[in-house]
Image 1 (cartoon, rainbow, N blue to C red):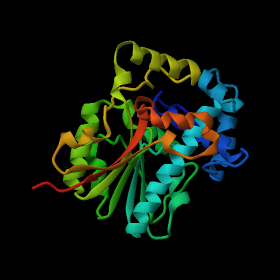
Image 2: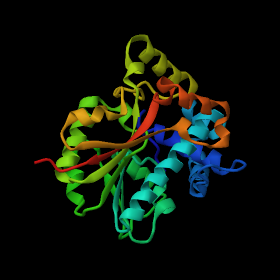
Image 3: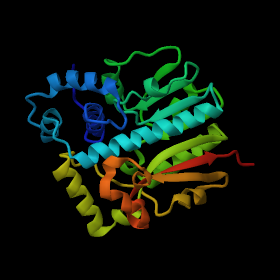
Image 4: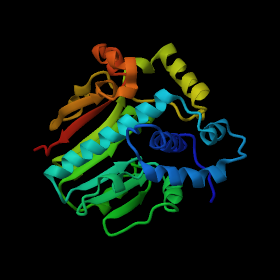
Length: 283
């Protein structure tokens, strides 16, 4: 197995290992058992690597807060998908920036069609763990290369982008929203966003330093785009409607501990959070 991926793509490893640690913990939040087996295989490849991130992953000594937050987020996104499926049993779901996660297995009702979309370097690796079927497919390209949309020919569409758009420029994310709205009117989007307040001046430098020192991510794995308010995306075009938003701190998960009180402080509740949008057809 050849592992040679970019800095941003390596964030998929961090997410996967968080899932595995959660699954092996007492009272797991997400309980993604498949991640345990994937990590065992990857450990054989990463063991002995000189990269600090790889050493951190193999050691399993990832910060508890990150493991808890990552598991809570994945569980909530599964819930968003299941709620959409309850309304549209034959839905099509596009998992943007899927990484090495196995969401399809966790939410499948036996009828949905599911697309995992990510950079070729991640899809090439993921293909070694999970096989395509009639209802499970890979889209191996950048989400901003809109050619992938030609492969999707159905209604009742949900797009999901967990831990993706903060690594992208706002103009690119806006362009994607508008293209999806034009090509797939009346679809829905659930995506994670970052507060643009923290992307200015010294705040941005501190954030980048934190990611490099605490998580040992590469230079290119830094946040670039964000919004200030959940309804800000509505200003991008007519027909973009905020349905709801959600923060880690809204969770009643016991493992959050005292951090649950941060739900009452708007700046912290909305440092990194999720928005749910309807993308209606415009005249």
